Length: 139
Image 1: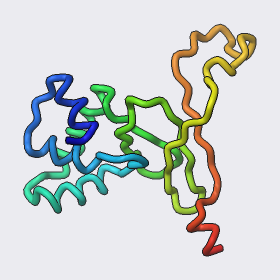
Image 2: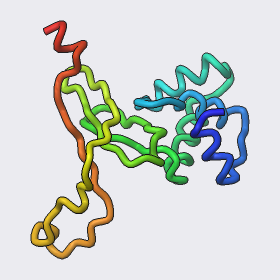
Image 3: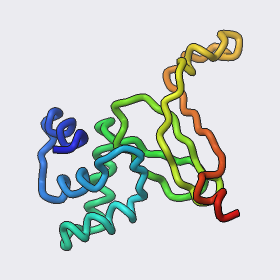
Image 4: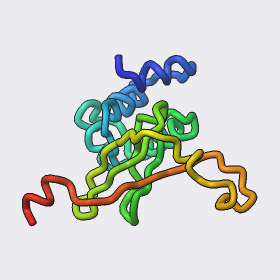
């Protein structure tokens, strides 16, 4: 059973066939699919699954905090099942490929008090940008 499925079951989330397929499609490291990509993969496993069901299921998983909604640029939102492990993203500026990265240190602690402007900082998102090896090889 996938890690995401285990986490969802642990929360008592009712596991319908449609929800299970969406969770299975999202399983794995470095998975950052759009809703349309999730739907296309889900249909290959469960042909009757609707686009609306996929969107609703993704929204529920995000609301539960088990999937992250990732917006790294003006492209479609992507869904990241690695919500349980703090990480940042490395994004290819050409093709949009996304990789999870786990740099050392604590970016919240790295923000000096005088740069917080009275905010109580609760979260940080860091996105590294560059050119992936595949795009660099075709340049």
